[in-house]
Length: 211
Image (tube, rainbow, N blue to C red; front, side, top):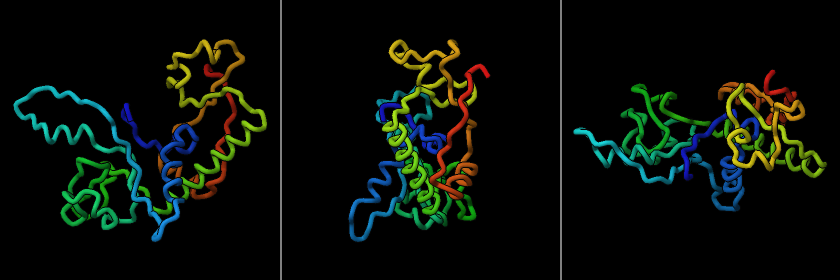
């Protein structure tokens, strides 16, 4: 990626970010013997980082941190990720400088340093992602092309940051255009929904952005 990206559970749930999970499903569906088993999905920030000089500057370490992969890993326990970063392990503990993975001293995942989905979690996410794509395609083919962008609270959106507003002609101040306001969800909330019914589409009442 030319800009830094992270996997956002709420964006994945609402269908704002379909790309990464779609890639994972595409790879998982490639015929192979033995079949492919996803170990994770990670973004790589393609950049030319610049570092501020200091007496304790370590370019090798700082470059490694700058190019750290962001995304999620798939595992039930630390043993599943033994080959991901051999500088740390569930037995020795530590935090990876390359991937979103860290262990506590007792061998458990440090979730402040890790982004881990279980295989069951990932399956639910993929089923939900597939349902979102099918729903979007069905609505487009049915003629539903209304512009009603998702918005968390009063945060800026792709629409408000776009250079093409004059083409989209989206202006909530007119009273005719409306944002689709949705609550920002944490992973626990998202997993609760997608594991209960991964095919449920999160349609929300459209509200005026000033509401």
